[in-house]
Length: 325
Image 1 (tube, helix red, strand yellow):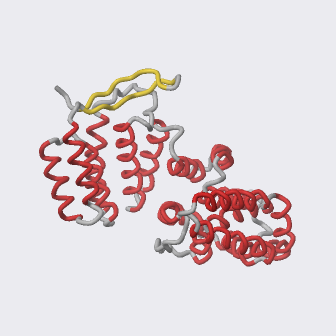
Image 2: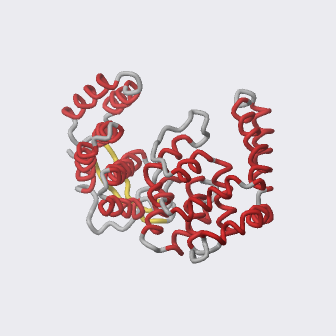
Image 3: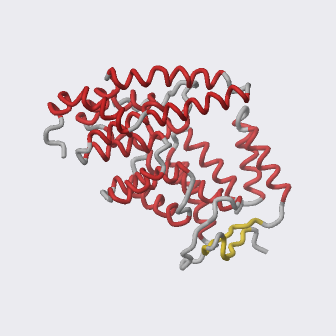
């Protein structure tokens, strides 16, 4: 009897594929114990991963975990070997003519999407960009809705391939995600829509100005302060997308916005509220009050405020963006 099965059916009114593992709860429990142990004893955890893998060579979540270890250790060739092994195990179960999606809320489907994500990043960081994009397209096929990070990567594909209309649809729909704000702002800047670009970039800087500093100085260092609200997303952005922001004109544009009096006038009180917000987390009542205050700040920064920033820096923009349409 095969341990991994693949069935199809209608899920949320769409054709869907379901990956399932035979009923071996003990294996899952042992695997999750090893995952937890990895946080404080990597050597022992990896030893347990390999022991479990010898027992069940097709249990690809374990292979993912070993691949992730090598990915985090920047041993990308080894990471690719493990992720490809996991990929091939699953793809052997999925029919070639399957055109449906793999619902994210099915546990084993999630593990396979994680396999694809790991392969995307391993190829990307080893400068095998074309292979990375091919796998990313596979994610778009199997996980078209996706969680935020997959949507971000999907929008990046359209952006890189010059399909700006599709990229813009994604950026417009998920504008609460800081990396989108920066990438969408970059797109608007390239289109000569400076005031709209200012609005997106200011929203991005409000939520994550650490990314702004990395772009301005073109620094690929992924060390982000622990107090950063979007620490994980900032790291992902720097690793996956920062190379798109090398253009000196855009970096100068961003620098002028960041230094403008109009933006700082708004940013300072917002950052103070964010600091209080983090401090107030244990107090649920205070926490909710401050969340409402943050939502109010975000609402205040609109087209009118962006226009104010634009007028302050417009003369400087003309000097270095004359031919930038």
